Amino acid sequence: MRSCIRTLRGGGLVLVLMSFAAPAQAQFGVGGRFAMVRTDVETDTDSQRFLGGHVRARLSPKTGVEVSLDVHSETNAAGTARVRDYPIQASLLLYPVGTTFAPYVLGGGGWYTRRLETLDDDRVLESVQNRDFGWHAGFGAELKLGRHAGVHADYRYTFLDFGSDDDPEAAPASASDRRSVPLVGGLLPSYKGSMWTMGLTIYF
Image 1 (tube, rainbow, N blue to C red):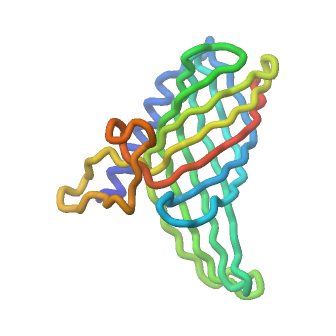
Image 2: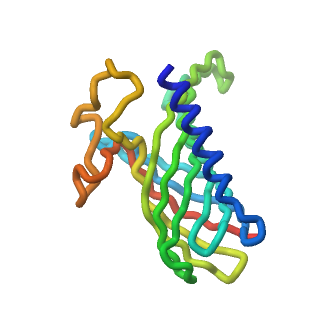
Image 3: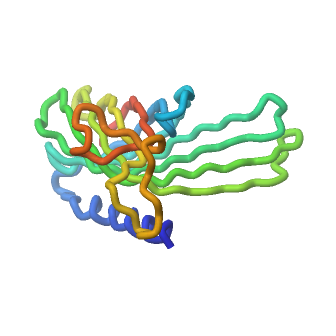
């Protein structure tokens, strides 16, 4: 039930983002990006490298939306198991100043899919998949390279915890599961993961 409610919330988020559309001013773009992702900031694990693509729309000089898909695949040394991760994020971007170098803040929802595959000589014998939904927020900047291109970089806190849960009987996240956002402590929700992204967008 909780996963269904979160999925419905995520679908509502996409509809809200689409409602900002202003066709007369919108500038749409597609591009590729590189991401370094940590799924759990409390564990001593290295960041994983993801490659992906995105669609961005500048709805006005100070607002935009982005939908992105990243992919990571890793096979064990014996070649008997493979893990594939497919995070999809939908984000609202707010630009305080609409200049050539434009800082922004962002927020939205993401669907994080992980597929575990059992292999035999590159043949998939069995596949198990699970999907989680989580909110994210962050900050970054975009540098416009003329009217039809731009490069950007941003940092995102993922799996935000707002201190409430759809299941009243569920135990709250422990300190080992979540970490407070630096500098602001309890003023903002805690988070579990993080990611850096860098990308190039071609606008039309």
